Length: 410
Ligand code: HEM
Image (cartoon, rainbow, N blue to C red; front, side):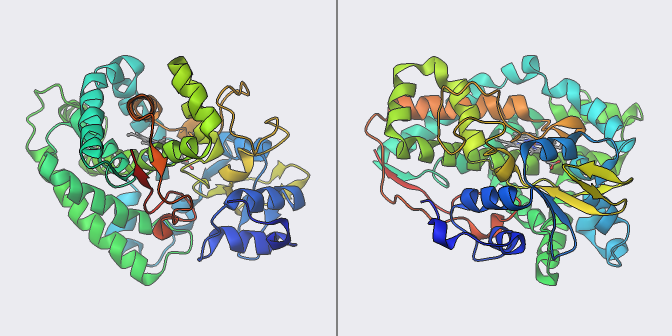
């Protein structure tokens, strides 16, 4: 699993290439650590900065002078903007917005994502996970990614949204996959075409769901229709929000559930500890998120003034991305960072981001991933990996990370 020391790059740009270019390095963590040791704040030969130590990634997320670079670099300036449905849609999606629009939409959404509201999803999520575990049990095993984790997040968020039928969820997942292509830092024409096709279909679908609501229900789309009537968000923002919530809920949660269980199966001592003390599940889930974060890199930001990071000044107008995989293994923040330790008390990680763009779905993600991990672990004491070295999902990289398939027997 670990990249042998001799294969590690000798210069920062070679490390960046290993992290960003296909074929993606299977184990990115030694490479991210090498980059962090050589140049924690590095101007890449691709023209953007990559920061990889915990303090700088946190600063990138929290600095008020850092704006969403994707917006500045592509949405407003890309010559394709006016004709591109995906760029038009991204502009109305929360992760790609800057204040004051971001502040306004976030304020509208926050009350619907509180621990109290999310507690109302518990029974639904538990039933869903149990049904999926029944299916695995009936088959004597299967694929952790597509026979289990893949079916959880979109179902849970759609239950909250209301109006998205089970039969439509496969399509929603496909559109979410298509849209992600457009956020790739080096998006090709082909990727742009896929993202545009997904944006047209996904946007039209969201419009139909919204049109089906008269604003009287207590599901989230009905609540948002009422917010729209009060003038708190316009129709395009409402469409952008519905697609954002389905899209943002999907990949990261799926990958965390599947990769998290995979890591437990690879670390029998930690698995035994968790089985003997289920109260450790919340802590274990956070440690698994630190150890193998589904979001490996931040959405790029743009510096709106000169910013000092580490010992370097990043000039106004420069694009900067943060390497979460580097920050989460920073020895200045975590003792023995390459060790999976579900009893670790280092205080979480940066895997759900930080600052104004920190994950809106954090309570939902924790609810469903903890249910999935706890119930899997308790129900299948003899679970084992069929393939110890599963293949990385190629399309997900480099912003996100997950496996293509993780075959298990029970
Ligand atoms: C383990 C699962 C998840 C992880 C690791 C995760 C991680 C993240 C990260 C790192 C960001 C910030 C990206 C950036 O600005 O660079 C983010 C933003 C966001 N996440 Fe999650 N996420 C997860 C699950 C969810 C779920 C279930 C939802 C449900 C709706 C969700 C909704 C959002 C939204 C709406 C944003 C944008 C927030 C904003 O820009 O203000 N996420 N997430």
